[in-house]
Length: 97
Image (cartoon, helix red, strand yellow):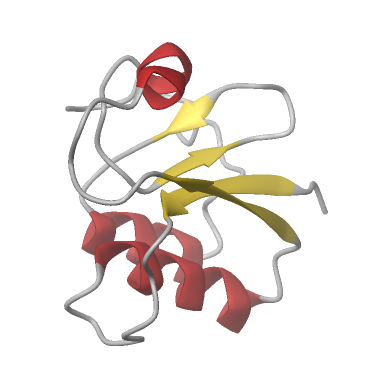
């Protein structure tokens, strides 16, 4: 299975479903998907690295091995991961804002 990068906020420590980044990270853990965490600054300030990767500044973003980015609402991202569809053909669809 491919290794991915989970671009997430640096302050994920609550480990509740109120935390969008944790929601996606937990889904990756549950599915046994190997990933690297890439932390981005606190708050919702400018995130030039995230914008360059996905075309928008919201987190979380999953960067696939081929460099494409997957971004959706965190509940949708977690559901896709749990459904085993992260590496499917539509996973590399353009990032949504």
